[in-house]
Image (cartoon, rainbow, N blue to C red; front, side):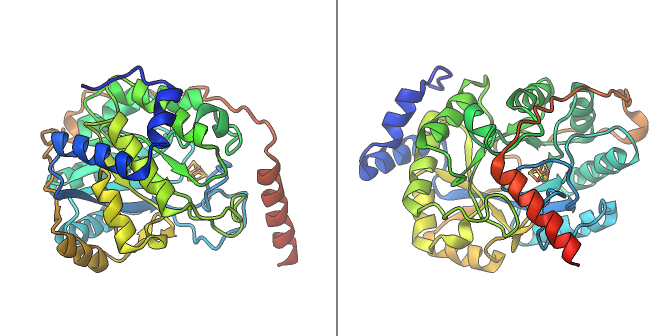
Length: 365
Ligand code: SF4
């Protein structure tokens, strides 16, 4: 049974169980709801990199911090198609396209993204996008183009979110997820551990995700990869035990969801990753980069799959392929809305310090 009334205390009690008991319970639930030998493989493509106006403390793509990221404008549909074909031939069933935007704006660039969605849908792959906040109309247009999933992470608990990001509020995230839910597009939403949050914050994020009805079809659990120049550059990497606990707890409270072992895999041993799969992770990102941070090479992943007897999941195992309507037959037209997404604008000390450091570096050049 899927529950939507988990409390923080109940989730904390699960998270803090003796590890063997926690893993056994998670693995048992996993086997009831999923094939434990199948793992869904996604490829994450950064279709527009860098120059983002937001101040997410973990992100090297935020324009205000000084990082080594090379920015690029929106990729062409042909470039995306070529990359999607390459991903398909190496075992990916899903392509997730990420653009470093605060929110989607109607216009040429969004039309180009809709064309990318149509193109990948025609390759018989699941298409996911992560483009920032979006309105219901924009969600409908993506759905009509054949989008399978929309990613929009809650990142952490509502309380700790304020310690990481000041340029938008938690309620905007929830509003966007709600807009996606009004369409037939599935929801992908998760978070990051290792940003300096308390275990209570991890439980708080899971409460927010489990309360959603239906629960997200996909929940990525990322371990922070600290990047020089970002406000979180000095965070210590989380231990594998914390990652296993988080994966197992997510599996128990969201039994039907695909739990995605996401960023931070390069810091994990093969044995550690295997324990995450045992504890209920059934999805990974493939490719040597996760947007801008390092990720294991796809051959390494396939070797690990072989070693563990895992198979990459075929596309559309959980839900039918969405129909893709050509642009000229579209029912939903751009509305040119300018929604007022919030800008709390409170001061986060480490974000301000990183911004200042970037400014000084610029002056040195
Ligand atoms: S996480 Fe996304 S919204 Fe935040 S700064 Fe990076 S690209 Fe922008």
